[in-house]
Every structure is written in structure tokens, then in C-alpha cells.
Length: 239
Image (cartoon, rainbow, N blue to C red):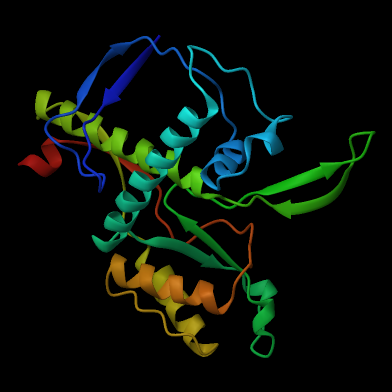
């Protein structure tokens, strides 16, 4: 049993008409991990996945599943591209202790794109003690789920705010803390990197360029330049 949101989408992921929201019963044909879904997207041969494939139900084939996952991924890519073109921003915070002027390789950044947060994983020995740490690698299928979660959240928020314009309580992210953002921009400039923070879209473009210049750097530092999400009543923005 679930509460579901259903859309009709065109080939670019644009919502056609109004979404349907309501109680539902979901009967899945299989349960996929992010890794397996990614391999299906990457057209891995079925015979190479035999040890990973879960039971399949309801008369579907793995080619049916592969086709649906690839279609969803195509839509998610188009939605994500459009979201960033409209000004959605990547978020980062520097770790000063692990950065030096003469060792750019030592520059550690935490890159977060909305819900796509960096995290560390640990490999343990037979006694349960950690023996290795490594960053969790986000794949396209992680972003696929993220895009549809964001679309669902936005759809539900619109329905709630339309039904209860004076009473609905929603959640949004506040702008970054200005002093922390300016401090970050100045610090990066001292290292030779220009960051344009005049808008969320400009900031995102700058961070994408920076990530290409200094790849594969991850920091577990908290995002001190970011304000926490806040709850607000529609009355605050409708009046």
C-alpha cells in the first residue's frame, strides 16, 4: 500500500496535464539495487548478471525491465539538465586543513548536487573492524531516483498549497549564508580559482568547472556555508 504520484510525461520529461495523487497498491516485478539498475542502463549482457539478478514476477522479461530503466534514465537526464538550466545550484564547502597554495592536488571539496550527498563507506575484516575507507560513488541511477523524488515533492507541494493556500506548511532551502559564501569565494580566488556567486546558476557553472579542474576530491566537512532547510506557511508567500 502506498501514496503515489503519477504523471504523463513527454520525451523530454515535461509533465503533461495535472498529476494524479492518491492511494495505490504497488506490485513490483522485481527489486533492483542502484548498481544492478546501472548495469542494465549500461547494456550489460544478461548472462553476465546471472548471479545478481533477483526473482522476476508478473510475466516480465529482463529486457522489459532494461527498457523501462533506460527510458526512466533518459527522462531523468532531460529533467536534470533543465533544472540546472533554470538555476539549480551545486553546493560545496572547502576543507582548509587539507588545502595548500602549492599543492592543488591537496584541495579537498565536498560536492553536493541537491540530494546527491557525498558519504564514506568502510570495508571491514572478518572481525568487523574497518580496514579501508572509500567514497561512495554516485551513479546515473542515483540521479534517476533523485529527479523523480524531486518531481514528486514539487507536485505534492503544489497540490497541498492549492488546496490549503492559507494553511499549508511546506519546506524550502534558504539562500547560502552570505558571509560564508563570500569567504569561500575570496579563499578560492587566493588559490587562483574564480567562483561566480552572483546567482545560483552562475555558482553551479563555476563549481562544475572547478570539479573538472580538480577531480575526485571528497571532504567529510559539514556544509557550514549552507543554511538549513526551513518550514514555512504558504501565507508567507501568497500574501
